[in-house]
Length: 298
Image 1 (cartoon, rainbow, N blue to C red):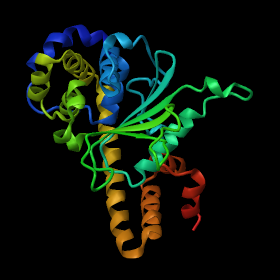
Image 2: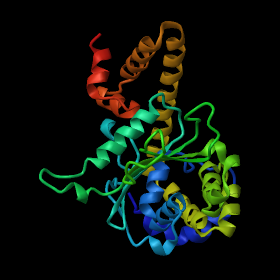
Image 3: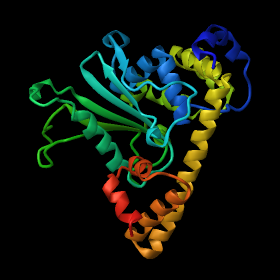
Image 4: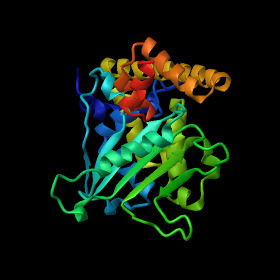
């Protein structure tokens, strides 16, 4: 496969001629993953907005889990999160997730805990790097929650004292852009939301006129979209998401009639029938392998 980065120079101007519907936008988690891996300017811009930092405050961003672009994603690699180290001192896990997940809260906490568990035997606890899981979602995590950008921390429930600043989960809800605060807008998170949800090249180009990170993203989207291997993986991810969405809806409806336990079992068995492995099901739903196997063995 030709290196998509080699095509970027031509794409700088060619994307301006693109019109109509985007084949794959940034809510496709594979496209999101590719663009953030290929274009560090876009990744730096996103991190700056999510953390409220200036560009000068971001000295370095190291991607800890790069993928080989265009290669097939195995069953155990279905989560397209970005694991990064910011300025060599802070661990960030960024995940694009647009389909509703019944156990998203539990799953995001599991990923956060895994990243926080970073010391080797005998190392000083003071060497633990701060960890933050950032979920970009297109569904309402809580039915009554209208917040656009939420920040969850471990704290005292009585007096709201933060227990530690090294551990947290942020959630950017693309369905709640209208509720963006002044701080959110100052950090251009509302613009990022429009970029993520853009369905046409016209929308992308409008954003690119006034925002350099949108222009960089548009250039990279155009470049990688010319690569057949990447397009195939974007298509595979969309099919994968559709399969899971169907399993979720079926399991949810079954659960309303038969109870939560039966609903969970139905989701797992449906996924198994579609050829998903127990390991994949566990990772995708924020469950342990033992929890999944309990239903498999029934």
